[in-house]
Image 1 (cartoon, rainbow, N blue to C red):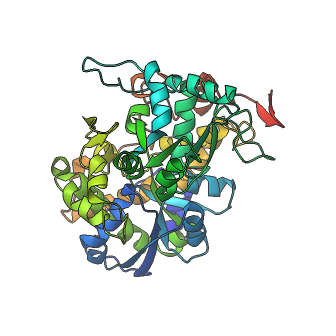
Image 2 (cartoon, one colour):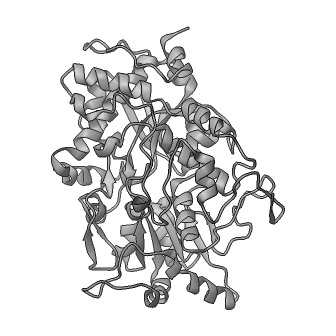
Image 3 (cartoon, rainbow, N blue to C red):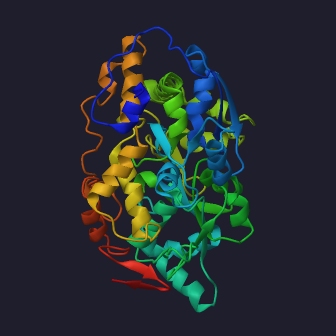
Length: 455
């Protein structure tokens, strides 16, 4: 059994400290994929700051057309790894959609998303939203303010269409979570019907992130959930208003991961560690000294090779603020978090949350025991690789021992009710009890059969 076989097989023991010298790499020329979003920043920074090169890695970064193309590229080997939706490695590993064993040793960020509606919808929502002492809309804004608008659209014979970036994206689950918390049914999936629109009051469909503003402007959708800079782009264009950030929806929620095939990790253990070391250093740089490097990061991300959006639009959220309505700029220092709050550690509890949302909306068709959620999380999320890389950085004097959760069992403390918009706490160790606590969504042995929930 090779060292990485052992690492992939068990997640209970911490690897011994590695030597400080450069690792003997199995593969040093690598191609990584990404989507044009602000949260690909650790890849861009690891390249531009020379962290990949420091590890002996010669990396090419390539923008991908959409999330499916990106995942297929990793699976077929055209890409060695990629910036991924956290749901992608989990869905692929359990065989939802494309089947392949994808793993992640590195979580790329926390937060970073928003939900935006068109100007017309915003004006219709505003009478339903309380205001603060200054007359500004009071945040967080509940989807309950949207419910009468959707009902009016339905009375006029119009379906209420909204965009999200991929069926297993955080954005899909966050948009569904927000809608359901406000009493709006976002629809179910079944084994026969994968539209996700069974019984839906708001119809959610896929739109690639960079196309969100144009699709909203065209009137094809009335709102969307997406990562930055595409919410702030709607504000800059004057075509829409972000109504809530995911930080307000669920404080310090997990976002993207860096994904590789289990086969790549097995065959290239030292290369995997070297990549993880470089990405940890990039995340540290992005958050160090109270975000002192963010202006430089914005300049990097604005380049055509990376996100390619206007630097001012990227800076609107990347530098610790967020603009809602035009001119309504508020402090949100943790809107993009890359290293603080153990953002880069791949927690099993984060994986379990994604799996509960897949089950909640019918992408996982049948009930599963709590043990299944834990087993899948451990097969995909690899904190032991992360901690081995972190230990090497500490031994090399490049990271602080205190910045890593060495004694974690892989599960965060339960997220308190106060940190989630619907006031329902989340404990990754008890996924079925959590599902049972959510008023809208599948629970117990329920299944979606045809257009009905049975059980």
